[in-house]
Length: 110
Image 1 (tube, rainbow, N blue to C red):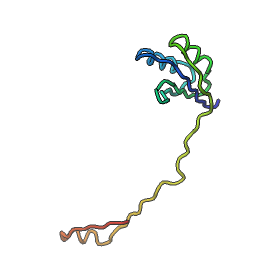
Image 2: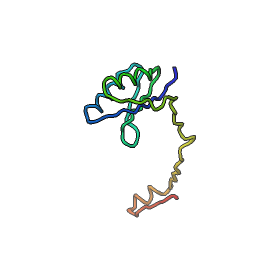
Image 3: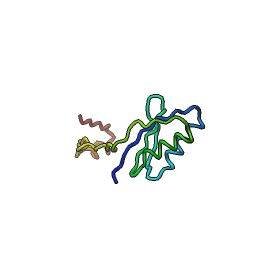
Image 4: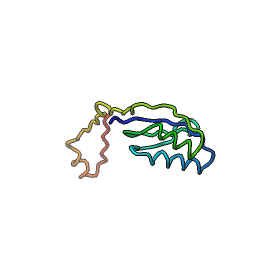
């Protein structure tokens, strides 16, 4: 099955309701992660495979209060950069010579 992301808006009044809403979201089968999103942190984003969005919203309505299903869609995966930046390292053949005679050695590469 394909991973999907479900966003549910829950009216949470207090710390107990917040914890209860998160426990319900995590208890559903197929859930891999759940987090609070939105400007007021009143939305729960649930990601996983094979999650029933209707079951999630009805459980939230029964146990927490008013719940609204905001969106259901596929998970957007981030692609890593093609190639990380390379660092140039320049080795000075006289490095050991300078260090053995006590001369300070400074070498900068830009």
